[in-house]
Amino acid sequence: MDLRQLPALNALKTFEAAARHESFSRAADELFVTHGAVSHQIRALEDALGTPLFLRDGKRVRLTDAGCRYAKDVRSALMSLADATRAVREGQRARRLVVSSMSSFSARWMTPRIGRFIERHPELDLELLSTNALTDFTRDDVDVAIRFGPGGYADLHTERLLDEVAFPVCAPTYNPGALPKTPAELAASPRLLRSDDQMWSAWFKAAGLTGMSEPRRGVMYQDSSNLLQAAIDGQGIALVRRSIATHELAAGRLVRLFDIDAPSPSAYWFVCPPPLLSSARVQAFRTWLLEELERFRALFTTPPTPSDAP
Image (tube, rainbow, N blue to C red):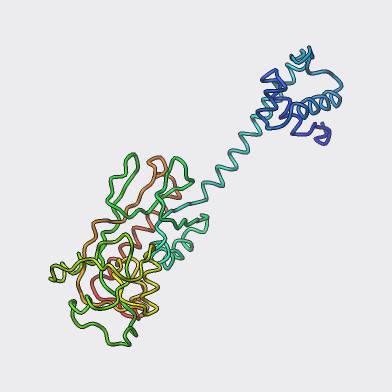
């Protein structure tokens, strides 16, 4: 048969819904069209076929014998078409890898390194979601999340990736170049702050200075990446996480003040739904990520210099 002689797909979908419900009204509700539109499509299909498909009895309709036979074949054909479409879409989805992470980690840690993953896996279409919102795997179209927190994520595959510490940094040209020589001097220096952080007092405690409280005045930043940029621009001294500062330290845009770490109560975690863990795209990303983390940890043995490449 010449495929050009087939009825329009919309007409067949409308007929299948009307036949299944034996109701033009319910078919209209399902397809989000008017009752009149369904009636028009069915009438046009009957004219094209040269035979009635429904018997009308006022507002009620029922299939004719020809309509019953045709409905069965149309439904089977539409299901085959739906299965073929689903297979194509699933094939496309298997090549798409969606990774969610905190904005600061994505910008300052992931982005400088992600080129190596793209070169290794050109068959994957990578999408990096930079967000501080917690991923809901039952709602969001996400394969993997890199979370920063205490852990304990129920019903998910969870791996501890990286412990975190914080330390003070500033631009090498800050003040201009007359940098604090002792931790105590930081108390009187302009400090850049994160609104939800309480790490300054922990750092002073690690430095052996007790009784130092969190600063109450100064510019507050919601995002660590913006905080880091303010320090790069010479606006003050920032207490930053090692993971997001190392690249800037290696490039010479920041200098670290004192070899004193304040351990963070939070860590980075690899999180994904258990069924996705065995998928090729998630395994490819996990393998690459663990390798990059090993390279990153190797930097801790010696202080980074402008010639180092993270």
